[in-house]
Amino acid sequence: MKWHKTMLSMIQQRQDKKIALAVDTSTNEAPSLLINNIVKLFEQLKPDTILVQADFKIRSISPVKSDTIKYYTHGKSSYTLVLEWAKEENIDTLFYITDVTGFFSEEMEQVDFELFWLVPGAILPRVPFGKAIKVA
Image (cartoon, rainbow, N blue to C red; front, side):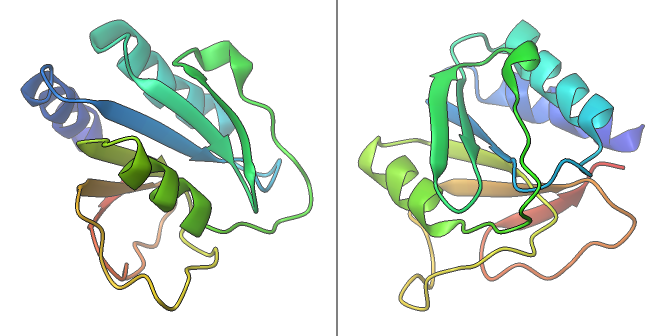
C-alpha cells in the first residue's frame, strides 16, 4: 500500500489548490473497489475535489462521491476532452484514474497544470506528459 501513503501526502500538500479527479469509465472490467477507495480518499481529505467521469466523452462533472461511478462496456476512451476541460476550468492538479490505453489528440504535447495518471494495474505504461503512479 505504498501508493496509499503517496496519495495521502499528495492530497494533503494540495489543500489550497483546485483539484479534479477523473475516472476512466470506458470498461466495467475496471477494479471498481480500488477506484472507489481512491475516490473515498479524495472525498474524505479534500471534499471540494471535482469528480469527472469520462470515456470517449465527459459523462458527468460533480462533487466527489465514491458511490456515483457508472462504468460502460465499450472500452473506448479519449483523454483530450478532460484535459481541455481541466485547462478551461483552471484546475491546478488533475488526477486521472485510467489504464492509459485511451486516445490523445496529436496536437496536445503537454498540459499547463499538474497531472498524475493513477494506473490500477501491474504494468506502468509510459505517459506522454505528467507523471504515472501505479495504484495496484
